[in-house]
Length: 510
Image (tube, rainbow, N blue to C red; front, side, top):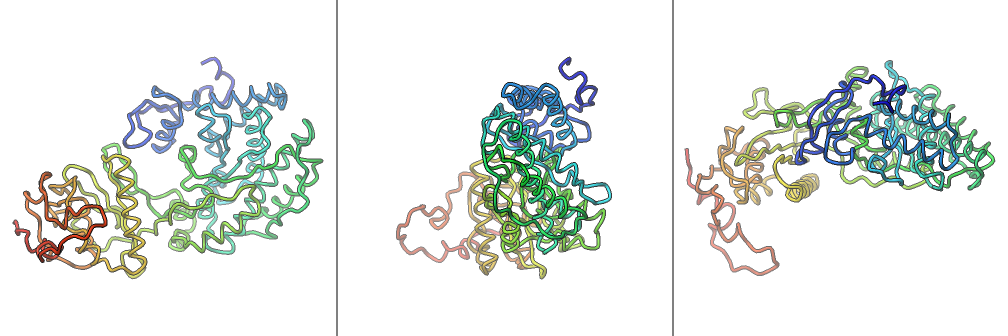
C-alpha cells in the first residue's frame, strides 16, 4: 500500500494464518512477521478491531499515525518530529521492544505504553541502557501526542522484569535482583521525566520539578545501570519544570504483552520452566518458557535457583524496591505463581505426561489437563485445571475450586480428605476416560482428578471403577451427592450415603 512506502513496513515479509484470540473465539486471518510465534498471532487477533482479516502493519499504523497527527494538531510535534516519532514507534514494535496499550489499538485515547524489558538484552547477556532510555523518551512523546498534548498524567510501564533477571542470571528473591529492578525503575522514571522536561521547555511548564527524589541504588550487577539511572534523574532535576504530573505506572498485562513476547506483567516473578500451549492439533503441550531458555543458554548450572517459585515475601520486597520510583501503586498480584515443575515421578508413567506434572485426558469427549506442583519432598502443593471446550463461567468456577484446594493443601489439609469428599461426585462431563488406562470411566472431571491424585500421591489402588450406568448423564445419585446448596438441616442418612458407602455400593466392572 502506498502509505507504507518509505517506512519500515515497506517490503516487510508477512506470514498469514488463521487464529482465534482465545481457544473459544472464532478464527480470523492475521498476518505478521514469519518469526513471530503463535501467541503473537492470537494477541494480534485480540488487538485488531473488527472480526475480519488483520495485519500487523495495518493495525499498528492506525494508532501510530494517530499519534503523529495528534502531535501535529496539538503543536507538540513539527512535521519532521512527527515522522521521526512514527518511524521510531514502528521500530520499537517490530523489534518487540514496546507498544502502546490495547486501548490505542482499539482507537482509545487514554492508553498506556509498555516496554518489554528482555527485548533490550544484548546477545551476550548485557542490557542496552542507551536504547532503553531512548525508548522511554519516545514512549512519553507518543503518549503525549495520542492525548493531543492535553494529558497531565501518562502511563508508561515495563513488563517481564522476571524474564530480564533470568537473562542477567539474577535470582528474583535476592538483593542483586532487587537492586537491578530498582535501577531499571529509576532509569525509566528519570528518562521519562527528562523528556517531560524537554517538552515543558518548548510548550510550557505545568508541574514543578520534585524537590525530593528517590535515591537510585549506588551499584547494581548490571554494568553502567546505576550511573545511567543517576544521570537520567539528574537530567530531569535540571529541567525548568515538567509537562506532566505523573508518568510511570505499572498495569496488569493484556494482549499487548503477549504480542511483544513478555511472559509476565510488571514486576511479577517468573511463572516456571514450562508453560502449556494449545497445538494446531488441538492438544495441550508443555513447552519451555523464554525465561527458561535464557537461563539454559547462559546459566544452566543455576537453573533451579533462577526459576524457583517466589514467595509472597519476595514479591513484597520487590514491590518495596520499585515503588519509590512509580507515580502510582503497582497492581496487586491476583495469585501466587506456579512452582517450578519437577521431573516425572516415574520413568514409565501410564499417562501421557508433559514436563512431569501435566496430565492430559478426555472425560466424556471433553479434553482436560490437570497440572500439579510438588515441594522438594514430592508432596502435592497445588493443582490447576485446563478445560478447552467449556465456557468461561465453568472454567472460572474450576479455577476457583482448584485454588481453594491448593490453599488447603498448603495449609495442611490431607489429600485423603479431598479424595474422600470429591471422588465419585457426579456432574457433566462424565463417561469414558481416554488417556488414562488406570481409570477407564469417571462420573465427573473431579472424580477422575481426585482418583488419579489418590493413585499418584497416596498409592490408593483400592478405589473401584464406576459402571457405565453410574456415569450416565441422567443418573440421579444419592441424597448426599445431590444435597441442596442451602444451609438446611438434612435428615440423617444411612451409611451407604456417605462417600465410603457410595464406593461400597459401586459394582466392580472389569
